[in-house]
Length: 115
Length: 114
Image 1: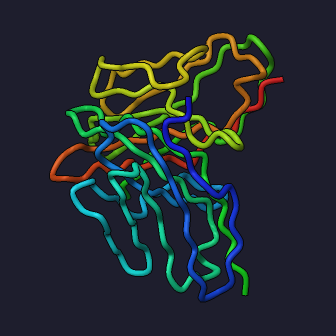
Image 2 (image 1 turned 90 degrees about the horizontal axis):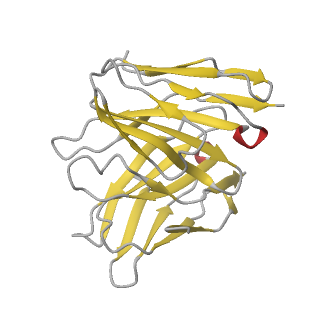
Image 3 (image 1 turned 180 degrees about the vertical axis):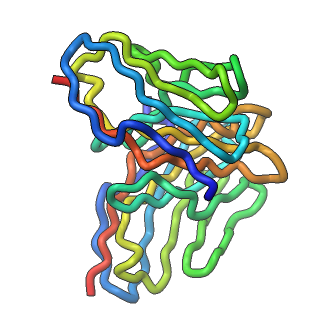
């Protein structure tokens, strides 16, 4: 049972364009939604995260949009750059003590930013 | 340098030969986890540990064992590896406090079981 569904599987965007990756979750008890970025040969690294008490969080060119009623959240990368080419994973967890580390990940989106 | 280390980075073994993948963190984190990454399936949690001697199953624990005898170390044990355990494995550690829940991942161990 896939508790966090991620789309698209792959994405090609021109330099300067907007990259959008979508995730949907089923478990309404989830209350922490991070995005991880993974470069080839490396482990994932936290990019940005959001709690459901806000509908949007922005850090530089990266923005998370969150829709609690639809149980969906998305990552927007503005002014996409070739250095953003990586695999992106959405994830979700609950924030009871000890459970934030019990992350459920999406299946990943391979982003390629072309010149 | 704050980091999570894993050894070995690459391992080819045969079915049934017991193996251990080590994981160590130098950040004094309470929480540690093991994940496997497979194409089209993303990252799936195998086991996680909330502190020394406290472990719990993740989503795909079958065929794996873990132990947490020291806070910094969290080895993954495959007592009788099978080809379906061929995968890329990641160890991660985290500290739940002051609003931070970031998991720090190691560099990965690519395991092939023939």
